Image (tube, rainbow, N blue to C red; front, side):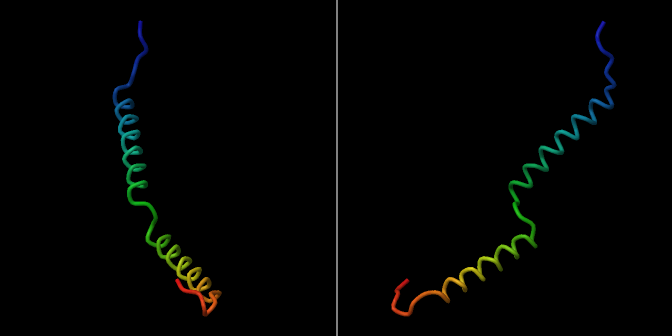
Length: 61
């Protein structure tokens, strides 16, 4: 005789797996949060400004 399976629980487990897969796809697709994007932009701008400050006057870009 086979193992008894509670169909309600099996359905909920399947839905949770599907939802987690969808969430993982969304995380990949949308990437960083707004705060993380702003922080990255600020950091990049600061690094560019620092680099520009170290350039010699005779150099051409």
